Length: 418
Image (cartoon, rainbow, N blue to C red; front, side):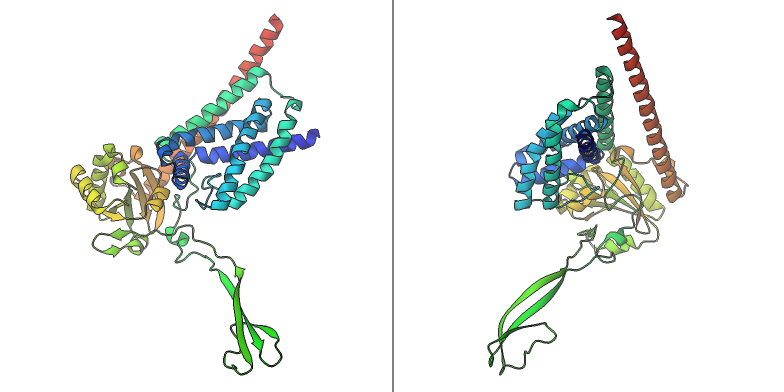
């Protein structure tokens, strides 16, 4: 029984950690999913709180997962896991039946599950959690109370730091089909290896002489022999399910030239896209810097377009107010939200491949890119960012070890005193 409950603890903890982490690295993505659900259930009054729900949900899941996985605060974690599953298992059943949103969003964009897959996943988790809850008093932690508290505080601070950084800048891990390094055409339906749904049509005909009913296909049914055969019915059977391209509904409409999507994706040079899914909700504090960047790159012969889903009147008003020096094209709002989690944000394409993305707080200064190869500049910037993340991880590891050591030393000292 001890082995079984520890296996359950580790499995449930790992799932909660994964679910909380992939939500935490993309808080805006989770917020958009909450908004989809609120709108589907006519609770749009809660939309302003979607981002707060996103932060709290990922923090709760991650902390519960860490506690279960490391066998610390296990009684509290078992209560938390049970509460979570009791709420979300019936909810996912409702979602599976009504299907208001096709993707549950329980693992962000890292793993896409249908609503029915999510429900059955929750049923399995609920069984494991019930076993954990029943056995919660049997777990013996490896750490003392103070050490457990320090670990929980570190886990909370870690998750909050990841969420805050991803909120203020861009997700530290990008699981979307517009991630850096992605060749967009390969992920679009026109060229990707998508499968069409295949059906077989079965036709039933009755023999007028014998009265027997026989099955035929489209290739051999007796459509000309009306003297001997009489049509009865037809039915279709699914042979192969279809698959949807990772990128769909991505069309860039120029106000004068129409659809310029392929022109941009096939451009052998560089194309800058200033993405703002809604201009009324865009942060205008960096618009002057975007204008400056647009003027410089256009002077170098590169393309620079704005992408938005706003109406022409809103585009015109925004352009006049902020003296925008580039052309706005229209694109589907959902695609724009998926492309970059910043409003506005900049995406740089080279030969149809995403080579850089910047949130509005991180838009490069023209002095930084002047007289530099853009591809080399982007690669160097990404390497520096990776090095920073590695440094932060090492600092966190050292801090965790030091905190655990100090906590153990303090606990031993207190035991000696008593």
